Image (cartoon, rainbow, N blue to C red):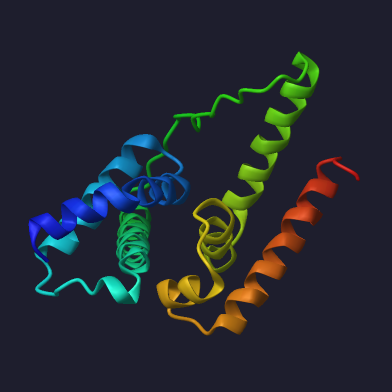
Amino acid sequence: MRAKEIEKCIDEFGTDIYRFCLKLCGDKEDAEDLYQQTFLKALETEWTLDWERNPRALFFSFAHNLWKSGRRKQARRNKLAPCSDFDDETETVLHSEESIEEDYLQKELITEIRQIIQTLPEKFQVPLILFYLSDCSIEQIAAIIKKPPGTVKSRLFKGRKLIKKGLEDAGYAR
């Protein structure tokens, strides 16, 4: 791809890709690295970008594949020489007109949901992040993770069930 095409992609949906990277990595620095690697990978490819075939999904696919590759690499490294990370996940600040108690409870619920999503297997985690946080359609998610749309729907359903069960186990009842 040419640099002008990449620049246009960054302008159009770069923030969506960054949000997706942030949700995958759970760490700002790692997300920034993944974001840069995604567009660098696109720049290194010999492809010409077809704007009719949803280039946004192509970049989500690049980011997802790079993230999976990095996780495999990290797993191999941890197997040889384990290390741990003591940084806490950064919290987003909620701006609302609610009372302090409601705001606090909302933050706690969001934190609990994030923790539950992080503990889910990757096959449920990625479709949930793409669908709810990146506003991708079922077909786009299917193209990104290279699975049929029915499988994506099934994983979304099971992922929601697992989140609901996790919230109930944590004491959140309807």
